[in-house]
Image (tube, rainbow, N blue to C red):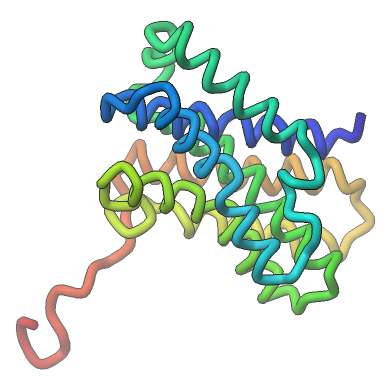
Length: 207
């Protein structure tokens, strides 16, 4: 089985777990948990495929994505008390998900002969919009719009991928290095409470 495909399935599982945990915390029933897990896991990739007119849509063309989401929901249902201590804010699952999906979305954009900048944007959409949909549907402020460095980590990893692609490095190593950049940026940002500046005052006084 292709290494990157395995990472895609693992990323789907991680995002589905993240969505299931959030929905469970909001006291959703099992069906609601499954819907939120599904949206979180494939929402970003589905939006990307619609934007670039890629058919079939990722999960429609490969039922392994659906089985992965169902397994993630079942694991959450049976072992939530064991999963939560890993990180109660779901940081671990989100970070794994965005690192994998950023690069897969970027790769797909490049395969569709998109400009590298546009392909990079597609990678970021793949990574963050599942989480945005999850948070909107569970009545939370999306993490990308709030305080943590989130999309910026995806941007850093995507740029790393594009730069390394110019050198004769095996694709799997490029993927691992770029994903590590995303994870590292997220870890540093959370550990040291780093965040992007907010618009509070303009040059002429308070807004």
